[in-house]
Amino acid sequence: MRSAPILGRFRYGYVAPAVLLVAGLLYAPFLWTAYLSLTSYDGLADPEFTGLRNFARLFADPALLTSTRNTLLWVAGTMVLPVGLGLLVAVLSYDIKGGAWFRVPFMLPYALSGAGLGMVWSPILSHDGIANLLLGTDTAYMQVAPYNTVAMLLVWTWQQLGVNTLLFVVGLQSIPKAPIEAARLDGASGWSLFRYVIWPLMRPLTAVVVGLALVASLKTFDIVWVMTQGGPGRNSETLAVMMYRETFVATKYGYGSATAVLLTVVAGLASWWYLRRQVR
Image (cartoon, rainbow, N blue to C red; front, side, top):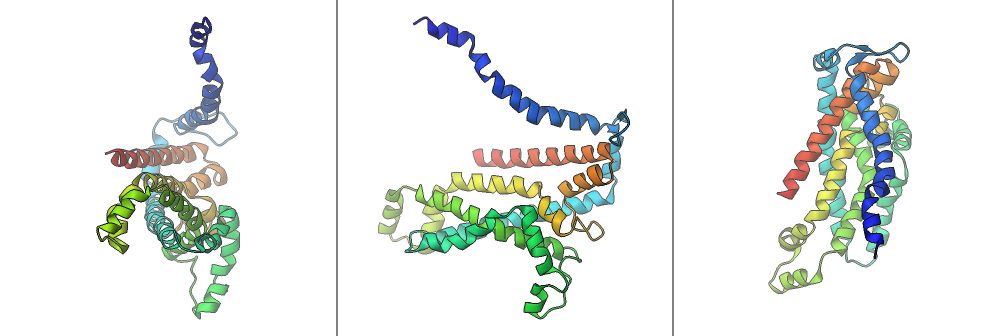
């Protein structure tokens, strides 16, 4: 009976290791990045404080407009293709004989990383690749914007379709049978059954899937870097690629940190706006 006050007295000590771990791995690096964004730093000499000069230069950089446009294109494409097609495949394969085997081919590409995905598809989409050979075309898919971004979006869809399908299938399996059976007794079927009964019941899971896709699209990096390195002429660059290029290629750590802070703010505001709408 006397253990309760002791447990209450040391309750903060129990969570302290986890809090310190999160602070060390997440908050401390971000604070250091925020500090570097206010300095001129090449990775060798000591950082020199310059105030908001990096941000002023960033917003005047034409590459920022291109990177923002491509990032928004990734966001819109991810919402329409991997999420939309994942929902379609889940609905079509749900509650049918052999539906699980039908979903297996869509799951296999998810085993590849973004870098591996780029290495597989880069030769296929090259000017003398298999895509032009099969289609009988002579198109430089990865050389012209926005076709290079659209091509990478299709490759991204090929990888992400399976996991989105699986998540939506889990959502379909969690739906109570009673509302669906009642709707069928009232004459609902097909599109009307999905739109007015199944889709509203799947809203909580859909919010999670769309939220994950939103964050993933905002920080798209690996597949773009492997397939185009943001080129040619930086016309397929995203905000994450721009951050990497300025930091680790051009060794402008202060300028790259400013780009990282901007990307963090954009991702945070987008997530906050989306979650707020879902709560309402």
